Length: 292
Image (cartoon, rainbow, N blue to C red; front, side, top):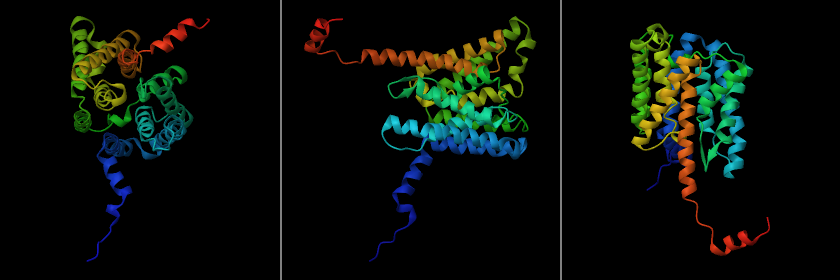
């Protein structure tokens, strides 16, 4: 009796299957699902160059940094997703060099501020804020399908909800969107409705759903527990709304997320500090006796 071997039995094939079922693999498939119709409407010739350069630059910059940090080569799939998000959000009319620099900002932010092995800042959010402040870039969020018919909003909502469910981040997403639209509604009743009317229209609704489902749920920078997710989502939404109302900043959503990132990073740092092992008595005695 002979045993048949097929390509599906190879370790590489099994590894690919595991990756496709992982959160990063699923996220890659969802971004591809959104990119195809968005790019078809916006024009492949217009959006593909910046999208490609953002992904490539992010991957090439992250690759040696991962090798230096981990001691072995690995696929920079997280960096590629960062570049992809940046490419889907930036205006396709910015120069390619600007798209490349924006992606680089995200990778630098990812490695610059860390607690243990986890990055504190969401790389895509940090990249968009830094790019606006340093390069005065525009953001169109074309990957959130604002140029498609209204029915396309259901696709953004459904894929974002699936990603939040898969990552166990539904409390975060529901809180963020709930606080976001609650504050806008209260502001409309208590102040000038015209100031917040855009938040209930295209493309701002698409932006909010895309942002909550695909950026705020980033596992390394968001809390795992439901109670902490509620507080995290409320902070992000409140700061975002403040930036929108009082500054009118185009980066109000990423800016609010960075504030929540810093809150969560501070909590991680506190837990890490409490978990540090005590200094042995002999070592402590030598340190105390050493001349300063």
